[in-house]
Image 1: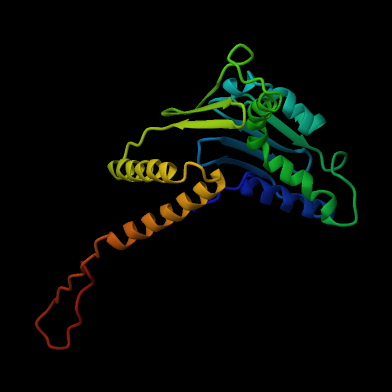
Image 2 (image 1 turned 90 degrees about the vertical axis):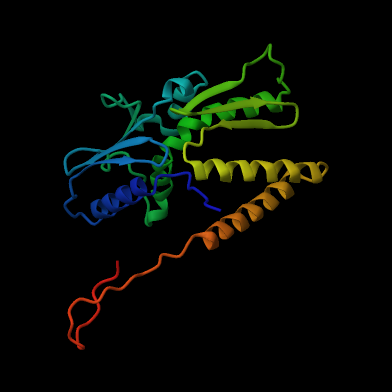
Length: 248
């Protein structure tokens, strides 16, 4: 099972390196780079000797998130680090090492801020879930009080969030384009349906753990089923001492 981190590791490492160099009073390396996450989120990172460290993010579905109070959550989380967005991006954070870096004897003073900046995408999403957790806690689960959240996550994928009386429900609608992905998806859903029927009264955590185990087993079988690549050797030349050519 692949567990994805909630922060962007590249941004975290870039910012950490720059802060450490600043604290050692070394000349800062000029940084100007673009980072693309697995889901299409695009970051633009800049840093130099005379300018603050800035991170900008572009999300195709940011307009969907704005409906649920994302701007308010970002102001709560980042305060004066939040500046006018860079052209073409949705959100920009700016950190001046001289005036905005937390003081302390060890890196424990500023590492939480580094992690928070690296969690920019996660915090853009937070407003949607906070709102529906609130609906659930207040038992505001009727359609008159709210509508289901619809986030057009990717071109062919949509995420729905809703609150019921005892849980918050997240649904992903996705399209498998690869034929092998279609087979894997169908087998997984059939297994899930069968296990859910068998463990109807079991806690959800048990069902999820069981499905993770079954998924890992299935992936191992697929790996074992992969055909071996046969290597053919071709000898070049007529002399007995000639070595075989490279594999084909």
